Amino acid sequence: MASRARELLDSADIDRVLTRIAHEIVERAKGSSDLVIIGIRTRGAPLARRIAGKIEEIEGAAVPVGAIDITMYRDDLRLRPARAVGTTDLPPDVGIDGKTVLLVDDVLFSGRTIRAALDALGELGRPQRVRLAVLIDRGHRELPIRADHVGKNVPTSAREQIKVRLREIDGVDSVTLESGPAEPKGSPPEPVDAA
Image 1 (cartoon, one colour):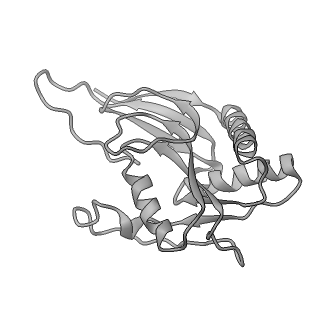
Image 2: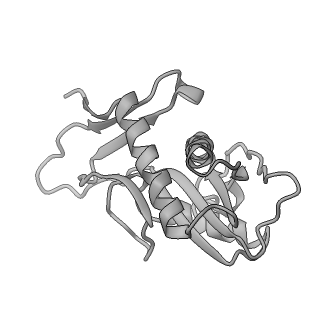
């Protein structure tokens, strides 16, 4: 049986969600003066740039934005060692010590990607606080991690996958929920590789 896809967010929906998240961030931080936004590669990085742009529109001042690669901090590295290591790009001349760092990712699932990002961040400095913004929270947490800002909560089964496509990487903006084949009765669910 072939997989089925259902669109959850289109380009306009994603734009509205990011606008709402940007307003929430500014309200909670009481401005943007000590804010640094860091996207988790791959799709968290363009989302971070978009949120930073929206905050700049709201506040009238640029917000430092960067990207972090967590490859070497993943707890499954020994299980899947053949991974390309990306780059971590912090905003020039801006440290994270004493700042509010907003980590941005596309999908929050088990929480393991965020744990890896926190480990990587700890090697770069000591922020005053770290907040988390995600486009989609699909549940199924394995670690005690939650997002401060969520675009959309999407309850899923272990067999389903969330596919985020962004124009900067994929040429189109969309979020879809994809269902795999039905599992035979009595068989345990197979693990799904996701954030």
